[in-house]
Image 1 (cartoon, rainbow, N blue to C red):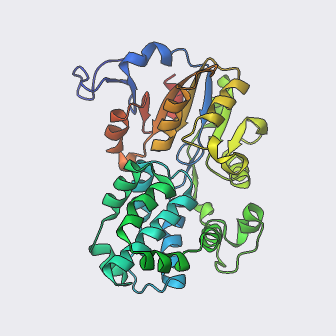
Image 2: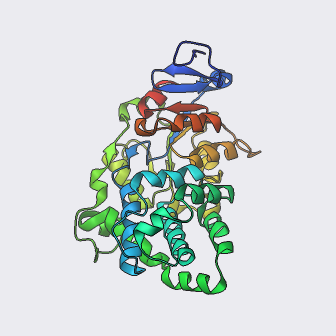
Length: 341
């Protein structure tokens, strides 16, 4: 491993170049060379979901609040790129949780600011940046969101918000936007009634070269926050469904809550099934880094875990954040990350 930074000088952040788009922790060089198995996330690693799940989050929040909560105006409340604020806060690996937290944030803002005008809600009161940062410090996820919002609200305000919030309706709306008329029934078991267009999943782009995984077989697994059918369809479209045995795929809807990222149970179990000694887990958000850190604290784990975080070139500045958080590898490309070990 090189110990030089981009400008050719000695690295001051503890990272060196593994290749043009890949940085690795210098003090982990020996361990990186011992990796014998790979476990991958799907979203942001196998598949680019910037045009699907991230857009679905934005549209779900907007439509829920304007159609079902009576908000007025056309100002976008959460842009697709702003969903990254939640991902970086941690605890929002599940996009339904993320959408729910965003909806609750704006329902609370509407109560505090005494307005449902979208342009006012975007410009006044707490910012999304401040909210997600505070929610992250409170533990992330819906628990973190409620820990930030509910102390600001009176009992009457909380009651009004709870009447406007319907998790089931929000999930259904998200499913219809993502799956559309072509995939909603296969993925979620119901024909869409609101969205009569093709699903946003048609805008997904495959990021990984399956041939790069062949030398690692059979020690390759999947750990994803997708549901079973979302995972199956994603791997099918990526050309990995026949390559990776289904028993080596751990998906959110098949896991108990205490096994889901960033909790380490599923990752440790997969590594055991792979008979792995040193496992590289490749993800793209803070929960993916945390699940590796947590797995390395499990006393009866049979593998040591190494983290690789894929950062989109469009948000290259996040490489600094993930280096600061201690990712073992930070890469702008999943294929380059695989080649680096």
